[in-house]
Image (cartoon, rainbow, N blue to C red):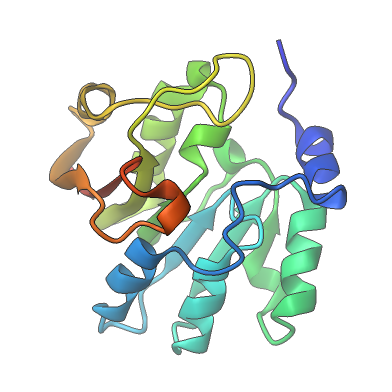
Length: 194
């Protein structure tokens, strides 16, 4: 089985083998961020990579934004692009070992990068990281891919079963505003911690 460790992801960024990277914030997340009014929210972007979402948030005056990634190369590339972003809010560590709380977690290509065997742990950890009224919001693939390398897909019913008991599903529907190359393949979702 492929070892999806820090070395694996660092190499992907070092060789620019990052086909998931849109080069800009994804339209569904931009749309969602644009309607947020509370600039004090503590926000996490897990498996952030180049994290155009964090850049957009930061430039929109959200100052409590954190990016976590196991790939130091990704974080270094992000910092080189977004020079004023606070270095202490770039977390180079394993998501599953993070011990903080957030009001909002934005999901963008993190779920599909994890081995499917970690999905229950993903749901549990997301729940643990959120404050009492916290939300997990973002986009998820609504299709199946290869089982031997990322991205690892799923379909709507899989997500409903996975998140039940830990989250209330507010929205889980086909994106109407996906980037063109992802059109018809994404679900926009908003979950509230139970």
